[in-house]
Length: 261
Image 1 (cartoon, rainbow, N blue to C red):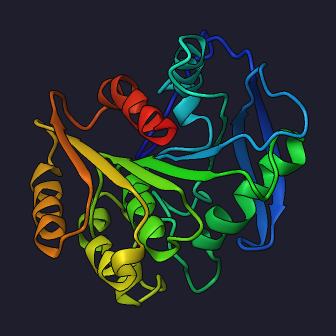
Image 2 (image 1 turned 180 degrees about the vertical axis):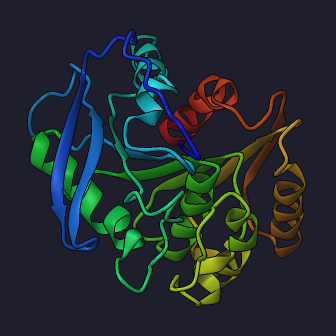
């Protein structure tokens, strides 16, 4: 009956989590965000804001209730390995199997992430403000978006990280049932390296990784070699695992530690 079926694990500890629904101007409709605010927020602070982007078939709750992102963050904070961070986990806008976080003819899924989502943290807690450092990470389709948006808006992000990323729209389209007609036709919106070339020396710090059993491994290797040839500083890792939540949940700490550093 259903092409996809994603199920949340509600046995996971929810301390610090909340869910927000807002009317998005960029999307022209309501949108959901799961938010993690740690206990140690203080007042009048400028806590880092980390946005985690999910992949195809997912929704705002995926990073928390499949990837346990807030538990990873809480453990790292308890060990003093990262400072307190507010973590935003937005929906991609729920277009088809996945919006790609790209501007479409009828809705701007990119502006939703870049402009509107960070404002949610500022409205929820006085520990965040427009002066808070802003970081972006994602998996698969969300990794494609993190790398591309980080390159397209280099002054917006202090650093970006990606796991198991698609690196161009052609790869991403293979996961999506719908036709991508109506998606932005600009090359920098359809290919990660093209966006990086446009940014040039203004690129923020970048890291990305891919599992050795992941079907997108070759694409990540090609991106790594292209970045190396172009002289774009970055960290690239190949790690055991495939295109799965076991891999993403096990390696999210690499993004958070990278951001802390």
